[in-house]
Length: 233
Length: 233
DNA sequence: CCAAAAGTGTTTTCTCTACACCCATGT
DNA sequence: ACATGGGTGTAGAGAAAACACTTTTGG
Picture 1 (cartoon, rainbow over the protein chains, first blue to last red):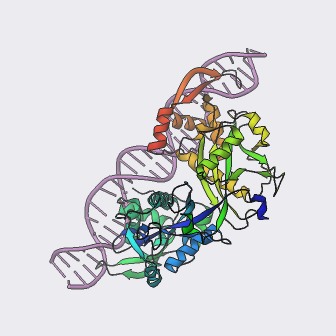
Picture 2: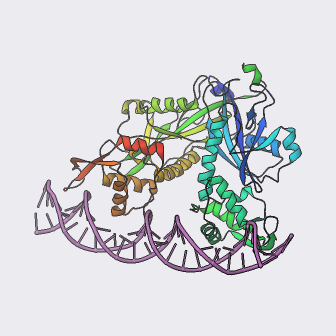
């Protein structure tokens, strides 16, 4: 069958993963970056990437790369954009499809992570990245901001139980601006996606803040049926 | 240099173009489709596509495909998504990046178009398409609707001079719902992108409707600086 | 003079925004 | 008792939505 198209050229095809995590204590959005262990650009900071194999969909390739670095599967991941300039990789002509994913920063397997030379870096203090990875990150951040406004994906970055203060801090870290506490709570609670638990978080205040978790069924409903609007002051 | 990556497989890489046009008389959004002239799936309806060449960026490949079919360059075009399932093309494993573009339906070179077996088909009455092209079209339509809400790209589908009625019909065709005439005009005119001309269009009514054109400088300003919000009742 | 499409403002509703004080608790 | 962060409601502004009649002119 392949002979039909055989007059056309073939290309290296890679995937790169922009992996977002959120550090509750530091209230910072972070990226999982690696020190590149091979040429070209060995020793430089880079996104997690890999080549698409012969019998593997590009989505599967992205999942594989993510899993090899974090030990996680079944995480929120979306295709971002495909970068296809002829000279974007000095090693050869490589086309790369970028994906971004949101993971709970404390869920990841630290052993696997460190074996791969992966490190969390705050998005407010990123190192220089190889090739066009900087643009990938910029675009992913824009997408994340837009996406978070209309879909309740913020939860993907938090543990199962979280307080409203933590959730608000997360949104503030993503939007890079402060949000009115009362308006935020009003809006979030009015969506009926959150369940208040009896338990309180007691590390950061004497009074303690109630934990919430989000209702997975209604959440899935949201993700399927339609979007909502979460633009806050 | 290529040897660095040489242990990795290479893939066929294609682009497919979802080409939107708007028929003022029929008030319908249309797609430019071709009857495929080669195997596999010869004679079936398909999007315009082509393979990415050795020394050509994927954006350039998409522009080339579009131009070969329409004679047009410098048109509005955006990357949509990359389709990378292993078996999406029965001829071989081909990864395809889809682009969508908006063109003025009357601007295109009819000779070039017909030589390629290209035909305009209403999006309300599309034929079956090969491979995963149906999903590409669905996604492009969603993107178009979202994009049109926040960016003044509707003009790309109209001729230089157009009436407010024509513009409203276009938006109604895209949104697939009717829009309040007064609210629509209020909103559009308040953006200060339109210039009223002295000339009237007289084909469709006795009274005649004033032509407008949009101010290219302010339009470019909009496209660069920021978005606006065009959700209408 | 009449049919057919173009054009034009106001009121109501709702959503977004701004804003300040009390509560619970560990020390 | 007090310091610290958690939790709560209301009023005003602005945007979106609903709505109906007059104008023009070719036949």
